[in-house]
Length: 218
Image (cartoon, rainbow, N blue to C red; front, side, top):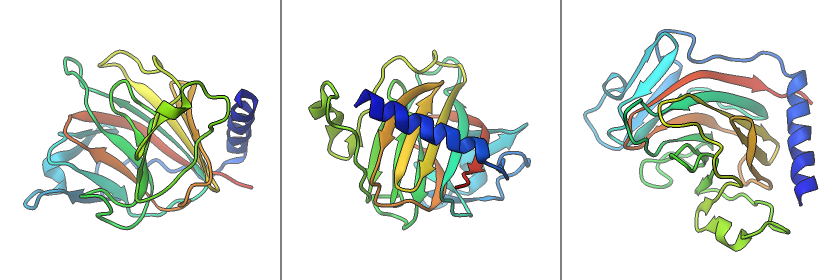
């Protein structure tokens, strides 16, 4: 099983060497490339989200997300995030392959890659399905908890207030996740393989920066 995971990670990583045409949606001093969705009426994008010097911040309330106007397939996504210094962190995530709205409350049909403090890299399926390695994984029966697919590692995140880096590689029906260089999750046979990318605002203030979307070539 370990060999299979390592091979999958190396194949995905090697594919990025051929990538060209990266996009940096945070380069502009606005969020015009993103649509805004909130769980409550009466809120505008600027009430919840802001951008300055390439750093995007969310207040965390009300729950909702910003979504790329474009749809993506077969790509590598790099992003950095941190919880504001002096806070206790919270619960946000990156949604990939987002399509139909309101599949679960405010959240669209998608696969959530968790950023929740001490749980970064967990998968949460939202109206979708994905398989994860089972054979030979100690405690596998505890990794699948309803919609939640726990990550492989503990301790990959940096202390609160410091910037973390997540890399999500989506190729065909597979999704591979690294946090600060550690392989933390891998899924295959995903029921979705294309859609928008969303950043959540789920109750806690959070900052994002250095978002790069890189297409993968064959």
